[in-house]
Image (cartoon, rainbow, N blue to C red; front, side, top):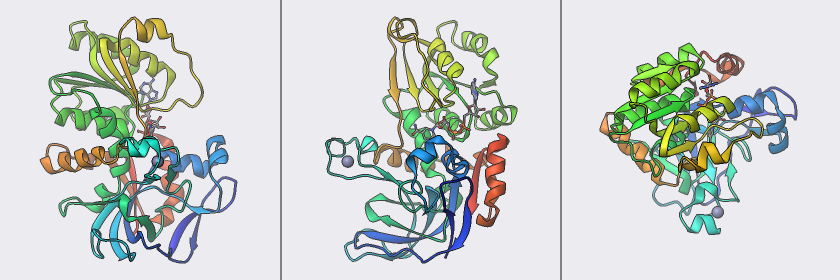
Length: 342
Ligand code: NAD
Ligand code: ZN
């Protein structure tokens, strides 16, 4: 089969013919149809310090995908050949303290496909059956292929927040921020305000239903007007940019909530007293998707018909055009970029 490989500890990928993976008794073999490309893949492509510290080449890249089950292991019962599926890409141990208390999204033994083991930018992938998630017939493969980042957005927007009727600020309109805008609109937020420095992405946020989509320097005036000077009830921080993190704390109302998904590239300073403690706010750190509450919410929102992520996908490429895909993501002119594999 064809697979996009990180072959050596240096920048670049290569498209190679490799054997179709063998499956264990608890695994299924999936023929990949669509696969989302993520910032993480760009880090691995460029071989930045994070990638160099974390990844051990050679391995197949990619962690967001959908496809059709081709073969199932001897112990697998509720997944069968021909099923249309996607999968949770974080493979957890199921036995540690965190897994056993419903917190496997922070399992310390997590192994991520396309990072710690072979991933999905290939014609086939082997996955533990426990990680497989069935897709409704109405969900196209390209939407199935972006459930991972969409799940990040659902987790951030809906975990322990109360969105109906509330005012929400989304700082950062990358693909995940734009999904979050659509989710909050569908969940009944009274006002969704989005900020970004990039005009293309602000336009996508408007397309997903943002009531206001503005540049960071316009934000404080817009929040004041939209909330009668109170500040927003909930902020979803989805940029990882320090100035936006400070804005998140500044624009949330006293007693409000800040959900933090964006990952700053280096340590940053926060004035805990004034930005957090004296405001009495609650801060939640988001990692991955909750297993499997987030997946259930995502499926149900898609079924509702009130949330359609299709406009977020702006580019589709065959696997062979991986260099172009990396380029488009780095340009900032894309929403979600997807490989159509088979
Ligand atoms: P992304 O990194 O492209 O999105 C970031 C967006 O922030 C960009 O559109 C950028 O223009 C915008 N931005 C830059 N400066 C800004 C500012 N001052 N104010 C507002 N916006 C600003 O793409 P993404 O894939 O949507 O990821 C969003 C963030 O979430 C990244 O930091 C990523 O590393 C992180 N992430 C976290 C998890 C997790 O599990 N915690 C998972 C995936 C991604
Ligand atoms: Zn565990």
